[in-house]
Length: 486
Image 1 (tube, rainbow, N blue to C red):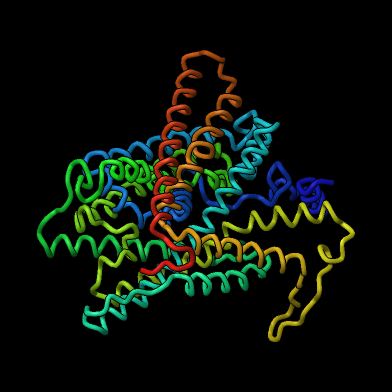
Image 2 (cartoon, rainbow, N blue to C red):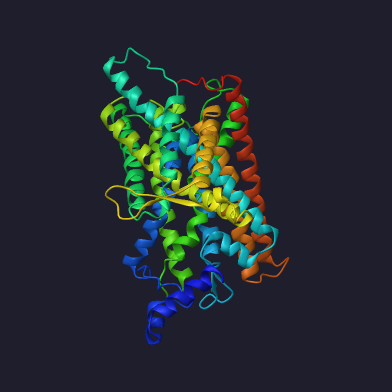
């Protein structure tokens, strides 16, 4: 009996028959209580969920990205990604139900939608890309968190020395500290289901983003000038070849800032119906992307206006803002707190996949299936220790930490992640599912337009990925493994 079927059986057995329809939805799951219908107040709730998912560490690299592209191309590329993301997200909302938009089978996750509508090898391809993307994000978060830890130490050191000590230090101890904390947190069952986690993440992300924006505005107000140029970083500051590659990498950084499509269906699954869930989500998506784009424009533009060609790769930790140092410490502490939890949220699907596969592959294995109950003082339920979970999750965190120490290049990693996830997850699968769902005729004008959009975005992802990979190669020429200092 499948999980969904088992849920239907358990719920219907526990509730009197005349109350079943009032307590459960048509799929047998407990009735969705998300107050997300089409009134203005409740659409704001869905919008808040999406904004919380979108605004994260990607905002920190936007000033650098605009600095590579300039005042014309930078905002234009950001607007382009916002329009494409909104359009493909609207297509994706129509794929929450397979078949009929009112009574069709619900798809609870992005992968469920791909499996239900497309099927075949595309399900495996989607899963592989998602897991690679999550693995890459865990590496990016390790790098970002360690740099923020160093930034706190360096800003205090710089302040104490009166600006005389450059305060160079290695990032390795901070990556190891982050890795050890993640090893401990990874042993907490269902860590990603803790109810207050998303609230903390939202508060922290808006804290450091808001501080970055505020400091940028303050710096522009203090100098009274907007730095930067129409075409971006000037030849001379970088070579012609570097200008090209960095511009392509900047596109990947902007793409990463808009990567939220994979969680859209999960958010839509909380929506109460009627009315049709897709109608609510389209309005919420439009509003959330508009708010996010305005916020991104402000953060990126004010950062570029403050520093011009020398905009740091990470707005807060590029050590461009020396004072007020205590405000920098608050912002970097917010980044660390956010990323400590976000790392676990993004790794949980990988943990669950491998553990489920191992259990199915070796169901009789004592090492894989046995759980030891350990009493926890002051807690009613004992902690269930599983040796396979302990070894596997520890090994995974150690691997991401070692890779982060080998490739501690925040902007390059962000660019690669943006390029890897943008075309397949934000464009290709939503377009293909929509074509299949709506039964759009091959070679019709709409079919051609959708395919052209997909191909154009594929080319953008390829060039952005190429720029980021070249960035890694150039950095490796002057980098000694495990000996990076800032």
